[in-house]
Amino acid sequence: CICNRGYTGEDGAVCSECIAGTWKAVNGSSSCILCASGKYSTQPAEISEAACDDCPAHSYSSDGSNMITNCTCHKGYSGPDGSDCQACVAGTWKALNGSSSSCILCASGKYSSETGEIAESTCTDCPATTYSGDGSELLTNCICNRGY
Image (tube, rainbow, N blue to C red; front, side, top):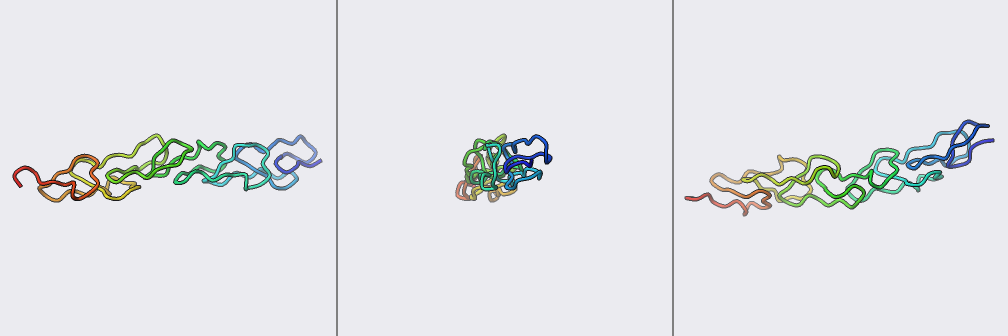
């Protein structure tokens, strides 16, 4: 006997279903194939790569992911694991993947007008003798210091 599609094992032995996050399209003893990175599958014994669903927009998962919550937001994006990720708004940045970190405000005296930024260095210094509050989005948020 040989294992059916969606199952694996040695010929003539007991077959095991491919675990969630994997698939196998052919009969026989070949191994189950991992869903590619950026995809996941929650059901066992899948017989087609098409069973591996794409992670939500702006998120990523490692090979063989078996839950949508394995899909975590890219750098510059935030949101709960397994959900649509939103770009960090202007005046913020996020250097890490995942939901464990939030978008961080540009420090006072700096601004950033772009969304989805991934590094603090994208926060630009206000011109000399001007100041802005935390999370400023525009150069026009930089106001003259007292006496200037």
